Image 1 (tube, rainbow, N blue to C red):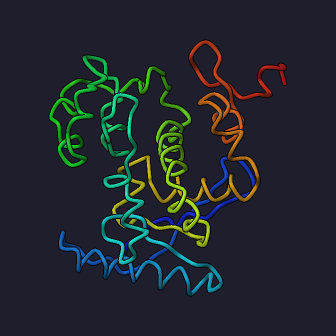
Image 2 (tube, rainbow, N blue to C red; image 1 turned 120 degrees about the vertical axis):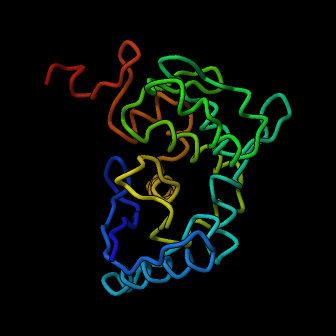
Length: 231
């Protein structure tokens, strides 16, 4: 047995909630094994929440929408004409104690970017730097969700199709090993759009931080809004 989260939109910051679900996990790297695990996870979830419509977002998804929304495949054209995946942008934006950001990773495939040895040999991760902007490590999924949601919104057909779902899984995501999750970002996108907050949240990274997490940047670090007023 294994336990993984299923992410649902929420009407309160940070606009998603994670429901832990116990299910039978099928080990192995083959797509057939991953899909067995997806079926098991979603079946266990739907037994508790039968009215939800679930979408697996990963390369293991059996739905074209789910694979298209995978961070490895979802891409955007940069101002210099290069087309880069969410994964490559994310990995290229990491700033470490002894190096980075390694923007040359924008020229590599998602898999190559993720496996670049510098990402493991440059010391502790201390920040992100992307598109000329700096992002702190906290809130923990702030930069990833901001990046993913911005890219999704650039693909109107995918974004519109996403709104038909109410719960999201990513079979490769293990919260004991990772922080960022495309299923979580998708749930946040749906919640913001449902609540009429998406347009304002995407006006800038600081506005996204304020709306989604109830925080704003103070001297380069996020600080809760209420702290600004001494409460």
